[in-house]
Every structure is written in C-alpha cells, then in structure tokens.
Length: 266
Length: 329
Image (cartoon, rainbow over all chains, first blue to last red):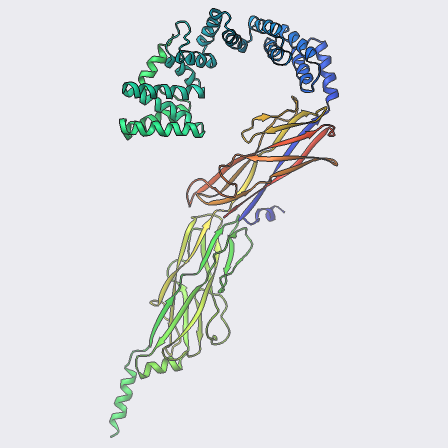
C-alpha cells in the first residue's frame, strides 16, 4: 500500500484539510457563567454581560455586571459600560461617571476616551491636555496622532513640540494614518520651502505606508517617488527605498535629521 | 574488339559505392512537458505523437507530444546509382548521436511507424540503435516515416529543457548497413519538471462557539488567521486557525490551484456549510511557483472560511474535509 501511495502520478496532487467547529449550547454556558459570577469571578461578569448584550437581553443588568467587574479588577469593563450607557441608554451622566471611574481605576483606553470627550464637549480643556500629555509621554500612538492633527489644525496642546515630531513618534510606532499624514506634511514643506530633507523623509514614510497596501498609499508613494527621482536622483531614491525596507524588517533607520528630531522629543 | 566491353565494366566498378541520400528532418521527437514521479518512469512517445506513461509516478502535462518526421530521398547521379535506388533496399539507422541522456531524461529506445511506404518485412521492434529498411524506393523518390522514442524519466537530476541528439543515416548500398556517421541529426527533447505536490500544514479550525439563542450567528477565520463574527467564542476548544497548504514543484512554473468554494461540515445528520476564502494573489487557477527552472519552487497559501450557524442548530462537533488540488498548467 505504501509503495502504491508513493507512485501516485505527480502531474496533479491533492491534499485534504479538515474543517472543524465545536458548537456548544447556550444553557450550560450561562449556568457556568452565573455560578462563577456568584463566586466573584470578574472575567465571568464581563462574559455574562457580553452574553446578555449579544442575546439582546436586559441592558441595565448587563451594565450592572460590567460595573461589578470594573470594581473587581477589570477597570476597562467600566469603559465598556460607559460606551453602552452613552450609545444605547443615552444616559450621559452615568456614562461620564463610569468613564471617570474607569480612568481612576486605571483603564488605559479610558484616558484617551475621556480626554477626547472633554474636548469635544468643550469641557475642562486643561484636564484633557494633561491626560493627552501623559498618554503621549507614554508613547500612546492615538494621543500622538490626535495631538499632531491638533497642531496642524491650529489647536495646539501645551508644549509638546511640533506636529512633525508628534507624527514621527506615532509613525514609528506603526500608525498608518500618522505615516501618511506625515508624508503629506513633509511634501508640503518641501513644496513650500524647497528644502530637500523633508522630501527625503516624505518619500521614506510614503514607501513604508505603501508597503502595507492600498491604492491611495501606492499613489502617494508613486507621486513622491517621481518628484524625488527628479530632485534627488535615482541613487538617493534607492537609498531611501532600502531604509524603508529595513523599517519593514523591524530595523528602522530614519533619515538623520528625523532621528535627531525624534531623539529630542519632549 | 573484345577489349572495349571489359574496359566499360571496369569503369562501372570504379564508381562511388552509394547513391546520394538526402534527409529532411522535422523537429526532433518531443515528449512535451513531463512531471517526474517518485521513481523512474518509462514513457513511450509513439510515432503518432501520443504518450504512454508507465508506472513510477511521472505524468505528462497538457498536450504537446510529437514524433519526428523524417523524409529520405534517394537520388542517383548516373546510370549505376540509379540502379541502386531502383534495385536495392533503403536501409535506415536511427541512433544516438552522443550520450543517451541528460539529467532526468534517459533514452532507452527509438521506435518507428507511420511510414509512407511499407517496411521491408514487418515494422521493427523498438531498439537503440534502430535498424529497418524499405524495399527499393526508386530513383529520385522519397520515403517518409515517423520516429518516436522510449525514455526513462528519473526521479532525481537536472530538470528543465533537456535534449538528446539523434542521428538518422541511410544507405542503398548492397551491404545494407547504414553508416554510423554523417546523415542528419535532430534533438529529441522534453521539458522535465519536478513532480508537483501539496501538503496540508494546518486545518481550518473554528474552535468552540456558543449556539445562538435566536436568529443566526457567524464566525469567520480570515486566511491570515484573524477571527471575527457574531457568535460568542469560548475558550477551551481547539485553537482557532486557518487551513494552510504548501505546494512544491519545479521553480517558476505556472500552476493551477483548485479550492472548494464551500465545504460541508457534519455532525451526524446535521450539517453546516463553510464558505471559503484564501490569500492567493490573483486567481487560484493562475499561480506560479517560486524560483526558477532546475530548482525547487514553492507556494504557501492559507484558506479561511465563514460559517453561519442558525439558532437551534444541534450542538456538537462538526467536521468536514476540504480537498485542495494543484496541477501544472
């Protein structure tokens, strides 16, 4: 049999893969979760709340479970409660309270959400500034991108440096939007001042972004590449392409001026 | 008066021994494209161009086998040679011009058939060198025949476009023995590829999910392994994964991959359907193996899927088989 199997014609071959799914009934799961909630398991509280929400059950009961979970070591369950309270129950006061508690109890995502909420509602800009500053200092890419955009749009925060530096830090962390917007910002700077360095860096980030795919990113990279080839020459463009490839391989090297700017970040 | 006929007879014996034989060879016998097997495989290229594959696992790819057409003309330049064309058999020899093979292609025998005239005797059995003859074809007349071959295709060795130089010689001399040099040559040829194979590297596993209490729910696993969908996912089951497959064969070759659009999973009499997706760039039927000819090529791809589970679907473990087929174009 083995010999026969080995002598299968090699012009076409097949392979069988399996597809498997284990379907469990809801009843035992719910009973299991309820038992664990009774025993104070905060993960089970979140699970039971999500089950309730997925099944279209009582939202208020689900929010209570999330608040219990938040108080039992799952602070981000309060952020979830705040979002549901705001969007489903339209109970903004309770939602704000849940969000504040999520911040107090240490849910990282809640800080950014609270900051942007305060700003969008024109409430306590100073506190929003503090929250964003703290997040940015910790390298939170969302905060860096938010603040960079604010700088570009003339809504500056504190003393956090210019938009390029903020964009760069978010771009280095891999945030696609930051990479694309930084490339555009630098290209505009080149077009305005004629300085070569912004063009080099614009190409660098555009190439990195285009490697992630997408027609718009590829079009942007093509546009900047054409300008750079004319102004910098093919050799310089090739060097920047190699640097972008190193970034893609996890060994990023920024153009020297950009590195200095990032090193000197606030 | 008696000396003049004797002189004339002497002149006849002093003439060159053979008439002028001219050859017109078509393209050499061509086995077309062959994927080698896990063992040496004999393939017969018949004089009509069809290929017959023996055991060993090799396979022909697509169409493209063709025999070599040979036309031989016997042209006497004067009275004596004309007689040779008219009176002597035309003896033909088909043989290797040099070595019997290269890389995975090794010739064992030639065969002949489809002749425009009857053979002198029955058609000869395949051999190397191959000797056969026709009854006298006449002055300035031709005979046309087809030459095929029998070759071993080895499991290892050089691949790609491989050739074996073949020589055709003929004579109408009284000896009936064609020369071993001269004549005309053409290359017997084959494009030899490594056998193509595909292996499964992982299964499409949706893991443990909770049956919806109303309506229906979905779970999707993208080819990259990302999990999404509305069904509540539970820990504790098998680790979720996309199915993975690895194809190997001759580098740089165009291949076709067939992936079922849907796969049925069953649990007793209950069934669920999986709509598949894959991460191949371009059409599955239009893929290429990496690398270049005469080196191994590979292509890895993943298959994901989406299952829609209606409420009240019986709980249990559902499983099915996804058959993926790969072949050279």
